Image (tube, rainbow, N blue to C red):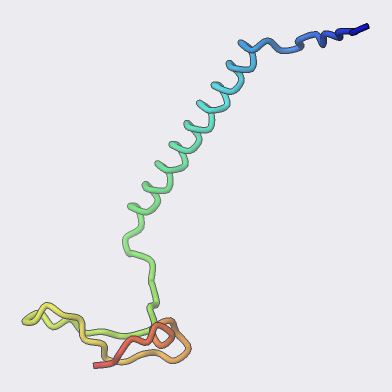
Length: 85
């Protein structure tokens, strides 16, 4: 004897689809809003953030090259084995 038990569907597939699509639209809108705010904030600042690479350079315009003046100790330039000169 086989007994079949049917579990009543609390949510139809239409409702599940509607909820998933709604969540996706809300997530996309929030991501777009955050991205726009980020770019507005980045462009509103008058100077770029300081970045320390661990070495100081001079640009030689005639040769179009960067010449490394010195490497700073304990910084990423020394760890990256950047040659001075």
